[in-house]
Amino acid sequence: MTLPIQHDRLAQLLMKSDPTLGLDAARIQLERAALTISCGNAAKTPWGQAALLTIAECATRSFRGGVYLQGDLDAVVCVGNWMPVPLRRMLLTAGCRDEEPPEHAILVYVGADGKHVHAKLHCWTDGWVATVGPVGPFQEVAPGNELSGALAGAMAVTESFRMAVLGDLIAGKRTQRLSPLTPHNPDAAGITLELLPSAMWVLGLGNLGQALLWVLGLLPYTDPGAVHIVLQDTDTSGAENQDTQILTKPHWFERKKVRSSSEWAEARGFQTSITELPFCATTVREDGQPGLAFVGVDNIGTRRFAARKEAGFDLVIDAGLGATSSEVFDIRVHGFPGFRNPIEAWPDISMRTPGGDDTLSPDLLKLISQGRLDRCGALTIAGQSVGIPSTAVAAATIQIAQACRAIAARRFCDLVDVSLLNPSRAETHEIEFARARVLLFEEARRGVNR
Image (cartoon, rainbow, N blue to C red; front, side, top):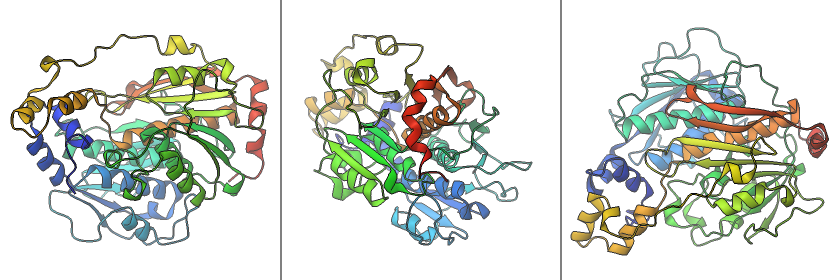
């Protein structure tokens, strides 16, 4: 199915990255992009399956030339609370293909045992550190976990997309390392992934909120029925969301995102409550509702409302993504209480609203002149944000890792500023989590340990 240009966010991303490319050339580039997934022993581990499933779900949305499977992927699923089915079946259900890949497909090898595999990209974990690079590790690595595995998978898709779709000559040439727990220092001592939050409020169910649910579904909850998630969103899913939002399927179209997300989470065994009302200045968390909030919306007012003390949350972890083609791999995470208040975190910035042809790129003007797009549609596209699902998944792993760190170590990053283009330059600020607030997470110590 060919989407109208107004709904084709990936084509828009390419056109904004290269204003001279044009719609038809952008779509040809997208249709050619293909990926092959291969794996060794990691297919039998939770971290490896988290990486493989994340690659499948992200790449089948970003690589229109197909995502192909190679090697032994018939281990039984052992990650999260999925049915104990063969891993290959789950990968095929995600949209992967069990057939011969085209010669130009980028081969991604998942695992630390692929020294002699001639892959374009290797993907592995070393404890909390997610790593991708042109060659595998030359020394023994520590076992990973579900969060570092999901992050490694997201980073692999990001690098592959840069190589196959954006034509980035630097992509895949360097080894990239990132820890969702301590992004500024991948080699810092970590925690064990044993204490998990059992109650949380997820505000926003677009690309960030769906990515967060996806990662929660990979975690080692022994009793997901003890986990309560409040889901809040006002939007309806559409065809334009399928390429960028990791859970969205065609049967979600024309339905409220919060209802479809609730069904997905409950199929994983979680308890959910939903609200379709906007989060506003008068919204206050009530007694008995989750005190941990994960926020993933692009509305500054809503983000401020959720982060302010009066909203009543004990811990708010907010994620934001870059909205332009030059920022599409950028992630910023804010935590509250933190060293900045919501106004300082999101100051008022006057933004120009597109209002004339001087705001339109040459390719959009060409589509108007060809009668393939009207001026109103072109202005709408010029103001739309772009993105790929792998960046959102990476952000979600950081959000959840910081919550787990606050529970286990009473410390977390209240600011993370990182780009998947060069994770080594991550900037963070750390803060102690007040002892009184740790009481919020006492529920996490009952029934949800590994």
